[in-house]
Image (cartoon, rainbow, N blue to C red; front, side, top):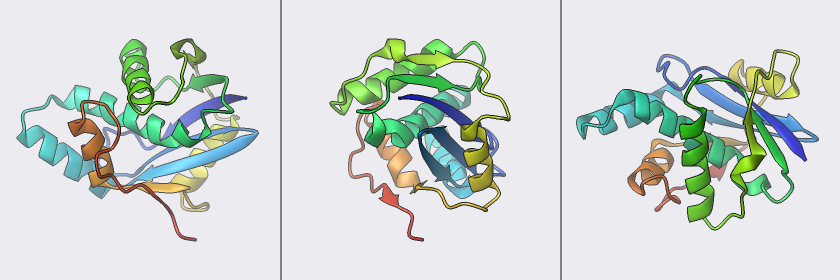
Length: 165
């Protein structure tokens, strides 16, 4: 199955939540609240980490958490152009996450292209962002930080849980 991925609310905008969603046959969405993003940035900056790299890693971790339970059926991933010129970095981070978690993954299945407002992934992300739909998962600061501490590896003690409806 080929999936498209879109984002509503940039990772770097700490005043709004971020929703990452995929769609095409199946659909899914994760939510990272503004509070969670600010907490992660505060802790990582205190350690001396660079903000631009943090955003790329947080975006990649979000993609990983969004896709990891669906990878058996995914044959192609088209990610909306969110960070022009940084596609290779995102692909590398995402590849490392899948590899370290033991999920079989071929990096050549990832492509970056304009997804567009007519995409079902855009609609899903926007609906969750506007709170007309519930996310499948709400990510915590502990989830993001545990993966970041593992050097873009698998969560160490992370507790990603489905959102209760």
